[in-house]
Image 1 (spheres, one colour):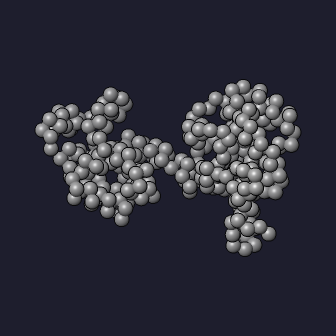
Image 2 (cartoon, helix red, strand yellow; image 1 turned 135 degrees about the horizontal axis):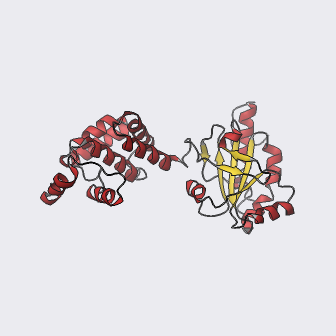
Length: 289
């Protein structure tokens, strides 16, 4: 161990309170434990991979970290465990499902409420757009003054999109939505969220397009909603399952990306959903009656 680092550890970390609400302290702490999984010795690093990938064990991982000279404090070791998962989740070195299981174990077994809170928040951030995990919540007031949320459409799929009334591609794709709603509206709810600065733009847009009879709402400046859905461009499409789970955070579009490219549309996915509800025969995505 670097002697200077050991002195810092003994003076500022060992047997000291963890100042979760002090931004400067947390910055110092996370800098001190930079790349915590990678700072382990080679033998421990190999063991760590086995613990995560083969056993998904919170207890074994915490014991391993706790055995390091600079992680003797269990509260700190657990906090750094959470940090390590945050940094390695997308590295491809560890199974994501196992890391989420370890975060769940922190939420259940930890003796430290703040660590439980951090683990829960991190799980939400890491999984909010991943297939099979709960899709981000939304609460919207529609153009008809109805309040809608994920819970409003339980037992049905939701085809959610973000659009701008000045987006040429978004407007072109809206043209085929009435037909999709007619074909699949018994199984899928259509929700379009307008991102124009002025909410009146949506009102005018719907007056000009009376055939657009699905759920429309303005985002009302809710930047958290855009962040939760990682909206970086319009139009953006999402498919949410009947239990509120994310099915596809990069769902196919309602219209082909290029003329004749029918395989690029969402229609075949919707057809498979319809077949699933009817349960006539096993679903074969990509085939039609």
